[in-house]
Length: 102
Image (cartoon, rainbow, N blue to C red; front, side):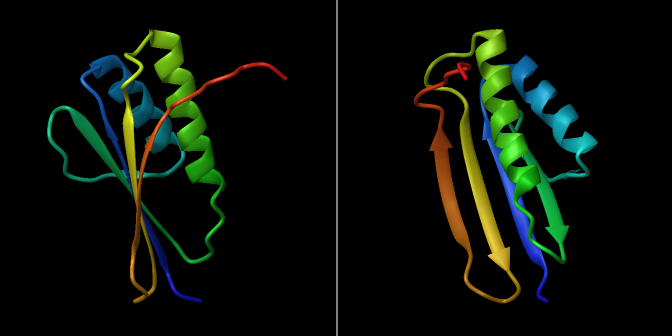
């Protein structure tokens, strides 16, 4: 099975948000990539694509942004996904709506 490579980048002017997301991601086993001061870049490679870590990371980013009161235009999350030698998929996401209800 081909290796899956995922790069998850969070762009924000809020240093507290970047720190929270970086610490959470590192706890999930993501490694740091290179990024400018207003962003964090996190990398993960795996043999079996599960997707749960990526969803957990997106949810945590949203929760953290809500918790610390980040601007509604922040953060921007960019995801780059590549499986084996296949072409890559790039996504840019913003939190447009957030609901903690059940």
